[in-house]
Length: 180
Length: 267
Image (cartoon, rainbow over all chains, first blue to last red; front, side, top):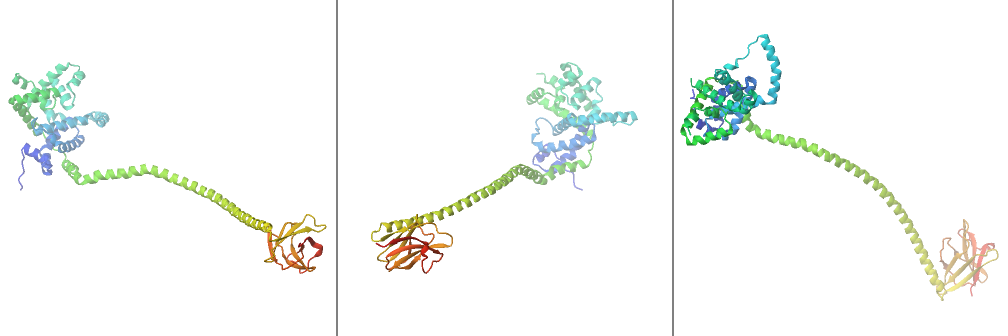
């Protein structure tokens, strides 16, 4: 049995920058499932999540030089790329069109009594779901749907200052949940 | 700055989750250089976030990895084919479309030029042919005129030559309006005749010159119907007079006296 190699983040990054195919394989094996859950929690659609995961790994491979370890962990960088890619797909025209069609079918499904995938219990949503209702909305809009605080302020018709403080409070609570 | 309050403000979570504005992120990045405890807080949240996400991993479909690797690394082998080929096909597709236009117009232009050229060839050829015919005609005419001119010149010289005998021939009754002259070289005995003043000979007839030698007519020779100026007839040693009769073509041995037109005595 061959021993499974284990790299530190900095070793992995160095190898990725050297365009090592083995390091890419390692990156995928160690991060794909985590990133997939992030993407899925944004999109809540497996087919789309598949496409976006591919997109993310191709982007990471091509833009590894843009990763700055001084700003944060590799994992954090990858999570943010994944979340952004998911939100971009969410905002894309094709997704919007697809959703319009889907609404009709899902209404039919609900009427027929079929079970919905319980996306609320997946990944980060599992924690967000435990937040206070007023926080939950903010995190949903800001984190999972990518709206700016300014947009949320207009959207929910609450002052920008309130959005700002409330979002921070929500995140502090989220952090506390993560520690548990 | 109360860094502890800043750390607990929620900005760190905002920053790590990518929810901070650009200004907030810039401020934090500046502060973390000054306050190492800020880095610790950031790192701690990152780790707890990672732990949570990893605890809730969802395995993507197993075929995805090879799909991505194929796209990334299969691409390296294919890259030349994929990148170069479209360029070539683009050129191949574009060039013909682009050139087709040009070639089409070129071909059309060529055909038009060919037709025009052919038409011009015919035009110029017929013009050339016409000119050639005219040239031939002019050349013939020129030669004729030159020849005539030469014979006239010669005739004139002989007429002016005082060493030559000039015998005026006068018309006989009923043959008025006919006049001729014999030029006789006393040394060479050559006889020339000028018939420019004579009637045109009828078809099948010819003038014949006679030398009257001792009262008897001797044929001096036939006069060419096409004679211009002075025409050499032949040699006559001696004669008292010369006469012209109209005879059948080829002449007669004896003159048809009824058809005598002119006569002149040698003085």
